[in-house]
Amino acid sequence: MTLLINTIPCGEIVFTLTLVSKLPHSMSTQVLKNSLHELIDQISDDTILEAVYTLLAKQKVAQTDFWERLTPLQRADIEAGIADLEAGRKKSINEVLKKYQ
Image (tube, rainbow, N blue to C red):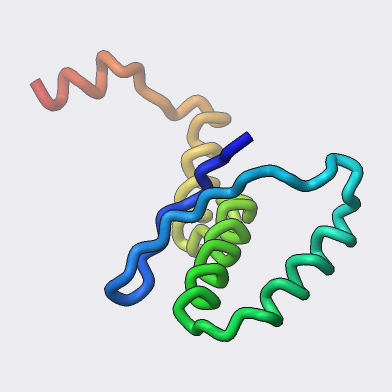
């Protein structure tokens, strides 16, 4: 199985990382992490290390709950909108569209 993971710009070079699954399905998460650490420790090319770092950093951001990435003002606006809806302060889409027609 081949899985395209990401295209990463790194300086003037663009890396397209493709993973080919050749690992046993029984490999534990801890064993996999240790193997990754060992492989990374053997890399001396800064460009490759930067590309791997960028890939892993993007993955971490993707796993973060979107609420945590919002500013306090954005959170407050969303909460105010929810409060308006719960209090019955809302308009139908037709009412909103009339304003702009």
